[in-house]
Amino acid sequence: MNELTSRQLRVLALVPQDSRIEPVWESAARTGFVYRGAGSELRDVSLLDDLEELADGAFLERVFIERISLCPSCESPALNVHDSCASCTSSNLQPFKALFHFRCGYVGPATSFKPERDGLRCPKCNRMLRDLGTDFDSPGDYFQCRSCASMFQTPAVGARCLSCGGRFSGDALQHVAHRDVYGYRLTPAGKSALGHERIVEIGTIAPERLVV
Image 1 (cartoon, helix red, strand yellow):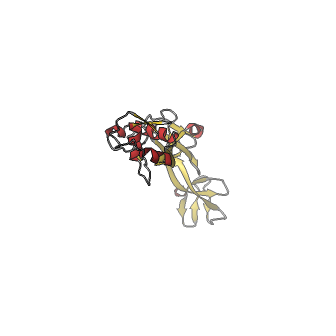
Image 2 (cartoon, rainbow, N blue to C red; image 1 turned 180 degrees about the vertical axis):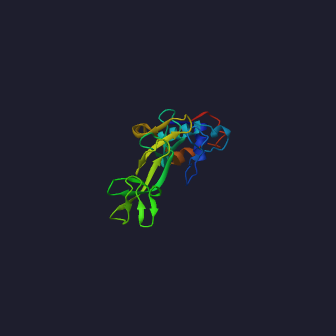
Image 3 (spheres, rainbow, N blue to C red; image 1 turned 120 degrees about the horizontal axis):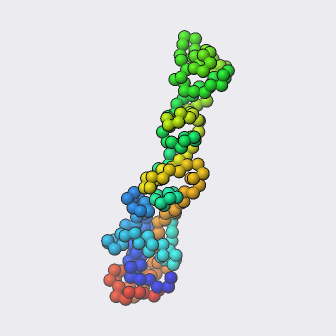
């Protein structure tokens, strides 16, 4: 890019000389973020296109800020990522402390074992569990799906698009796209363009195009 329009020069002027212009996260925006300009003309969605074009022309340097995930159906960034059931993909999960009865192999919520004077009564085989480590063990936290009653120790990862309502889990998550979000700072070429002797005042440039 060998020439700049007056608009592009005004965009360059938005970037602090010794800092950078950064995105503002905004859930209502189509992209999930916006760059704030100095006037209504520079606050529209095309400001990102201007910044990218100036970066392609080496007038701005991209500075990585964040990588966001996009819905594979509508490309919205409004994705709710959550634990989900490995069987039915529901996110209606209930965590619980589990106990494992060695003799009969039953694994279930600690609350399902009936406490008695001599220990705990197994709900499956009705035997008594007296010694932790000998009769039974606690394998840690499990999850139970309230939708299909499945129990598991490690939930799957799922996502729901809050824009189109699409639900994704398992292999479908492999199709979730990503977008890198950048801040932008002036390069020497950008500073030179702003300091060009033909620029009288940013925003009131007489010629529509300026060769730099």
